[in-house]
Amino acid sequence: MPFQKLLRSFRSSVAATLGERGEFSLDDEIALYKKRAEAALREERHADGLVFLSKVLRLNPYDLSARMLVAETYHHALGEPTKAILTYEKVVAATAYDDSNSYCVRARAAIRELTAVFEAPAFPLHDLFEEENPQEDSDGRAQSVAG
Image (cartoon, rainbow, N blue to C red; front, side, top):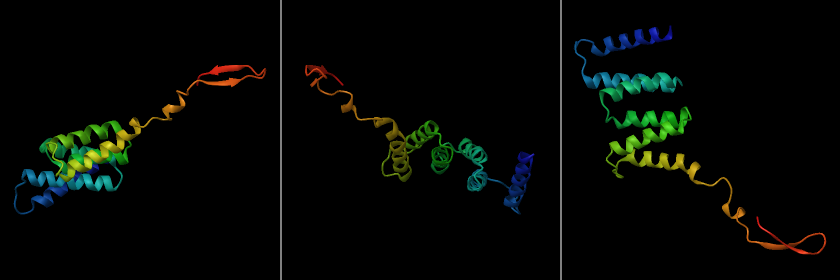
C-alpha cells in the first residue's frame, strides 16, 4: 500500500521535526505539509500534492502560496481549466483584489490566459455575413446570393 508508506514517512518526518523540542506548532505542521506537497508535485504525484495542499488550506485558508500552487497544478499539470479558474479567482479574492499583490497579478494573468480560449471566435464572423452580391448563373442571368 503506497498510502501506508506515505503515512510512515510522514510520521518519521514529524518525529524528526519535533526533535528535542517535543512540541509541534501550527506553523510547523503547515510547513511540513507544504514540503510534502512540493515533493509530491516535483515527482509528478499531483493527486498526493493536492491532498497535502488541501491540508495546508484547511489549517490556513488564506495561505496564498498554497492556493496558488493548487491553481497552477490544475492549470498546467492536470489541464483542468475550470478548476484552475475557480481557484485563481479564490486567490484574487483572498488578496482583496489588490493589484499590487504579486499573487493577485499572477492569478489574473492566468485567468485571462484560460478565458482567452473561450472569448476568441473559432472563425471570423465576417465570413458568416457577406453582403448580397449578384452573380451570374450559367445562362448569364444575374442571381442574388447571400452567404
